[in-house]
Image 1 (spheres, rainbow, N blue to C red):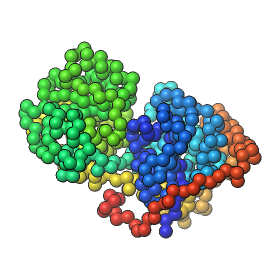
Image 2 (cartoon, rainbow, N blue to C red; image 1 turned 180 degrees about the vertical axis):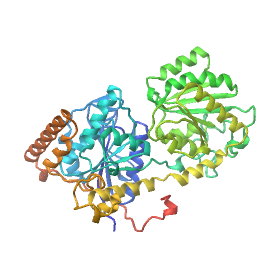
Image 3 (cartoon, rainbow, N blue to C red; image 1 turned 90 degrees about the vertical axis):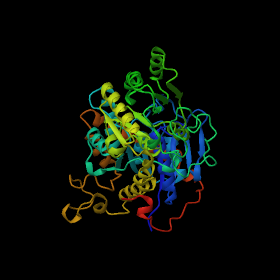
Image 4 (cartoon, rainbow, N blue to C red; image 1 turned 60 degrees about the horizontal axis):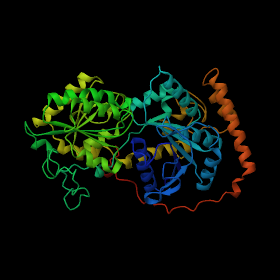
Length: 508
């Protein structure tokens, strides 16, 4: 019988804030709980969300009070959260700490404290960063510090893996690629037979496509077959309105797209500092009747916005995966996206039109997508079932569980890393073939050796941080003995009675 674990997912980014990392953590946690594991989530407090909250199926969320610095990331204090973190970990009897997000200070601090406490650690990277600007240099140095002593790293795409390996100077063998996924049933197109006027919770909404004059298709007619040469086409954009999401590119391209295609309109959902630029563009070009700004939308409302359109436009300048384009394809939208980062790995070519991250090319690609839809060359009504067969959170959870088995020693290092132990020396050694050992040593001297190689000055500073963290841990053990910390009663775990069916669960 497969072992079960007590896992703490740690990140600054979680609900109620919407986003790809937030959705990833929630979906992965629920599927791991379905596999019989215990999972808790540690994040910072949000407005109206403090203390302990319970979500679906007993998923417990700890909202730790922390000072939020920028874009929901907490202020880096290195040591101040250790007492609270230690208390939570001991109360919940955690044995694996899984951090998410390169820019999450809470995640990096948790990995440091977890290693000091003798816990296994995993880190999932969801982002791409450069190497030249000052912000990227600082972020990369922080990542190098955090990942010097981590047991294993997961990236959401092969492009993300290459970027992370270079940024943190990692051995590629200790980095696995496990993509994001979507719950396809939550992103059904209107033409899907399971969606009817009696079952759809949004069927009476004034914004529902069946009653919206510009939606372009009804609740039972496949959109690719109904569009004529003069039928209106709606282009949907759902994104955080920041520079890296290509909002400037979008602002420049919208007037040209609408000028070239009269029967076209935009729906834009999202919030951010670049929203003012979009609003100014709409005012200057008098496009109030053709560009609808919805502002921020909750994740459960994303599908209702997407099914109002025919094309999803994703002008991002950098993207490790792009879960939103999978959601759009699942809703039956033809995707126009920039060919950057890991986006080309996400969907097959018949679902997408790629563009360079340039204004002219984005306008041309959008025009190509509009022409293809009007000509009936794209069978968007088939996208949902295709996406459903490609992406499965059950598959993601099983692959993540295998990582946990590898770092905890439940499976051999040879099986985990894919090498022959008879040709690589004794267990626990360091070599280019094996990468960092699957079961790393917790000895302080071994940890210091790993941190010391991070740079002439940075290495010494990192070692000092580790020593201080270790001394703080000893002080907490004396002042607040773990024997006096109450153990939380567990939510009843699910029993996994049989092995998953590969075809049913989408495991390849």
